[in-house]
Length: 358
Ligand code: SAM
Image (spheres, rainbow, N blue to C red):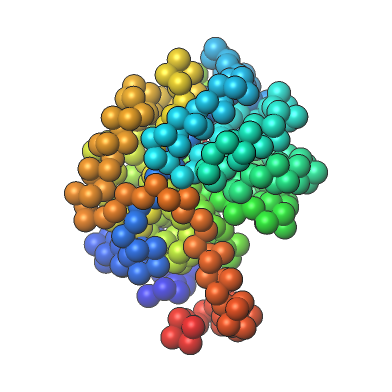
């Protein structure tokens, strides 16, 4: 069951058979990504944001104390992540122009002094900026499209989905490993919007996908709306796993916040194969409050890492500090060597399963 009709995706999202869905997603995860659960470190280096997304606690008009870490502090966090045994560091911030010229310096410094893969998640930038960051050594980029409903996207962010997708396209052209993702349960989002999200994940063939529930944040225009349903989020993760096969899919902080950190293993059993540990210095961590109750607010990075490793092992899986490059890249390179890439892609587009041939 690795190709699904939109009507079948819809039925599963509505909960027609969770047991079957999660069992298959778990099997697909195991088959395409193995037993490894990749550990990534995240540094949330600034909450300064020029955007005013209605769901986000660090939106421009939110009344929060702003911070902007120095280049040295950010690089120090990357070193700390490497010392803890991580192979990848994610550098995330609100969308701002403060770091436009500093990012190349930060990336270069990290690449020269560590073996880490560097992931950027700093929002919408020009093609030239993405090129500059790539030339400095950035390996990957995360930019969630949030919702494939362009009207809803505009209503909630005040910006255009078309522009966001253009950014994703540019990142792909520049050879980044690219991650997108969505928020599940946004006010005004329908099940059909989620069907479209999942189909889009498969069609764009993203290397990574971040899928998390909407969590209402006090002080934002959406503070009184109900949170995204956790089961609906797990179903979206499971369906994305089944359709994309080997994308890297994290058990996001948002889903772990809603489920409780001791239940992260359940997300792996629904198809996730990655988890991110927060290595932002404590004095800043609590100010990156995109929603309340984030699981990483209070625990120190080292004890969190030990606990999550235990949990992963307890679920019969293997924590991995490897870089964990895109499995899609590897597969495409192998197919290319065998001269099979075109045939495989064409057959995939026709909805056939070609794994027997490769
Ligand atoms: N500026 C970067 C960008 O736009 O991609 C990264 C920072 S942004 C704060 C990171 C992610 O937080 C967004 O992609 C969004 O999905 C998520 N987020 C923000 N507010 C949220 C909320 N209330 N509930 C769930 N996710 C939220």
